Length: 297
Image (cartoon, rainbow, N blue to C red; front, side, top):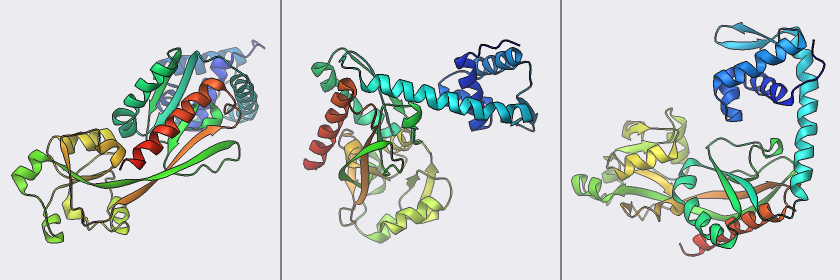
């Protein structure tokens, strides 16, 4: 047995254990499944033990794996703390900053802000993590997060930004073919593109005063970009935040008599990296851009 533990292999084991499969662990680490599988196999070979057994389509920790997991979690916490401390004390305005935001915000809002950032600090390399899942800033899955929920972790610093209104939109082509709805009766004849495949999405819209019925749902996707592209190409109507819609001239706001859905926005960062000049610059620029956009609405 090799007594020197490779942290890359240990991190691969930790991701697999916490996410329940090689495929999910690989996605979390930004690796391919075969690469992660080789890392776990190499760790098992180095330790001389079997860490996982396959049960159906899932991987289950063996007793040796359970014992190893507790130690590797402590290694991970120490590595995260070290990385945070180092990042927080860096005064270099050159280097990488990772930002996580929803896929729609990443595609339709962030690029213009990043163009301004490049003029201000051309040495900063931005890694945009376009994901609708909440990334773990404590694990350094991102440096900065644009979230629609307030963080609960005490280690995170969150700046509450002005709520962003979301309205109903359709493409001009869709309205030309189907007519522009004027009344609630007209609205209920429209094709709606939803973000959730089950009835919970309709319930959320109803609670916000939008009279959407399950019968109106003609397509759904968990991807905001996919939903928005379906709307742009005339498949139906949806609700979208104004920060995205204002950058899409092909769409038209409809039913102005319906009150907007107000979407909370939180700009979040780990307190250790908040003192990093490079990350703080990007953080402040994102906050200023979001606040300016809301003021212009």
